[in-house]
Image (cartoon, rainbow, N blue to C red; front, side):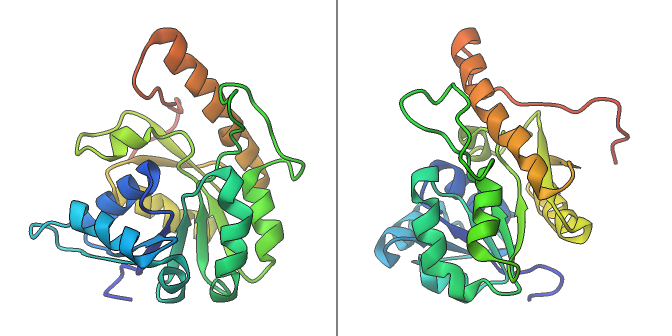
Length: 222
């Protein structure tokens, strides 16, 4: 760990959400490893995102190598790929904080809520990884294209996890990225944000907007 900043892997970091999170964390001064199925694809993403002006460090690796060498591991892969990728990297996640962003979208009707038998993608991840990994879920309702920019994003990140200390770490990471974040309770509550993503997709279509988000009112802001 460099100073008080943990090293971070973004598994699936070449996708829109993963690359947006990677860029913001890198700009905020974190050592970030973009993970992909192949190191070459990850390194190409690094070349597109890296800048000499950032205080952070950005490198690329395959998913297993990225998970192995870092302290916090973000999962930013499609629902259809979550199980297989978690199985690949599971041996390297014991004791680590795993931030799952997966939403159980089932094409073609992605604007319809379709929850898995485990009740949520986060609970499916926890079931697959077991008790050794510290699973928190977040970033379900933030538009990937907005993360790719530098502007302030007018929405809250809802953070779910059974350990408040782990949630607080993720709240801090969100704030470092310039986002507002809210403790939203235990991991089981992740079902609300995961379902809300489909609702927001429908709202985007109905109102022809680019990335609707959510705000929690009535709480004190820092």
